[in-house]
Amino acid sequence: VGGGGGGEVTLGGVVMMRCDMGLESVHGVVVMVGCDLSQLPNGQGLMLDDDNDAVRITGEHESARPSIIDCCRLSMGEDDGIDQDNAKLQVSHTRIEGFVNEGIAASGGG
Image 1 (cartoon, rainbow, N blue to C red):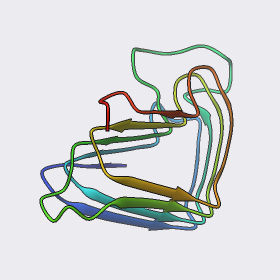
Image 2 (cartoon, rainbow, N blue to C red):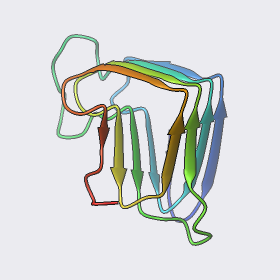
Image 3 (cartoon, rainbow, N blue to C red):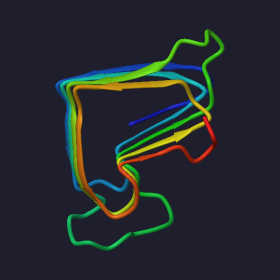
Image 4 (cartoon, helix red, strand yellow):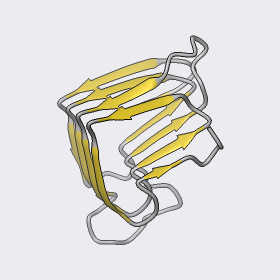
């Protein structure tokens, strides 16, 4: 799932498994509620390329609204659970476990 150029993406109750990357948004607003992302990219403990985050949110939306991740489960990944790169982000009631790198990476200093 991808979004860019200031778009808005809402996911509710989505299950994603064994895909290269879960969700990526650039300068957008993401709302994820009740989602389950696991075994990224392949559940075998091997990175396929240089970026296999469950969720990557880059940059701030022009409205300055935060992206929201609520009541989700992110598990078993070969990169980061959430890579927050200079984005406004609110995470609540979410279980993040079993990632090779960080559970939540603030890679852009945001």
